[in-house]
Image (cartoon, rainbow, N blue to C red; front, side):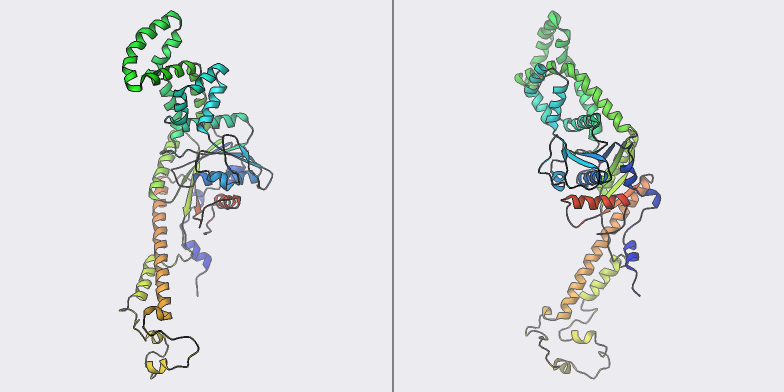
Length: 446
């Protein structure tokens, strides 16, 4: 009696205990949840996960904006939008009573908006035109992460959306955006900046005296390191930005506290691979250390098999039996006898067999090549499929061991598994499918 397909499928993949299965629908339906942050190492599906969660929340009645920092523009393509920029755009084609908007962080434009919002017109124009500012806003270390925090704070302050889903920057460490405000604050409070801002703060003759004496001493060294023009640009920039420095730290602190608030939920996204789950463990520990509210782990691209009862070892043994002529008689002209019920003890000779009436199909070719034997060809194909199945089962075993190591280290983390799909997600239908799989912690396989 053949095994029940559902039972075979259950045997093909590991199961989480019910207490550790993450169900995202209660999270998305809770009106007190205002921010969902998807974090994880690069290439694990953070952008797709964020988009799928945003779409599902919108179709369950919420007004959602998805903020991505992914320059690959996959989010725009999957949502049917030509391109995304710093302005939220309405996504068409959603179902239900909610709304879905999407945007992609423009780091420089966000920095410009901060300057324009916290400086008068003349000073803002001077800052925006300053060469050092243009370099800083376009690529200073940590600027992207800091501006992601700025944009999140802006969106939350507008109260226009009741849920913000954030796809974190593709940094080497996906939690760099938590450190960015501190790094920028350290830069703004650093010794060099204090020296450069001192003349402007002293003012009058005292300021000029400091500038003439102190700066002349410093210019010789810094001019050699930075170049005279760059040093001048930095001094001009610092003088113009002096009144806005305090605002950077204040807003960063406010956004940081917002991320610690009960209305925020962090989801760590990972693939069932050793390096990705090692990073996920680091994220979990770091979020705990920072008192950030972690709700669970999304384990993406989990593989499965509908023939889980056939182990890799048995599949390889069967493939070898088919391929090795010492185990199974595969000699030319004997393939027809090998599986015959009369093969043993039969008085029928090979010659008699070969003289059977022709039914229109050639029994072989003159060269006697193995490819001319249909049964031999079937054996080769079967052996190849068995080897592919063995590789699949070995992959499943590696994924389960990796996942079990993570759960042994962090048994408190709720997990939802998303099966590996045969292709990329490129439209709302695909995102909706991912959302369905995320929501129920489903065990069905692709």
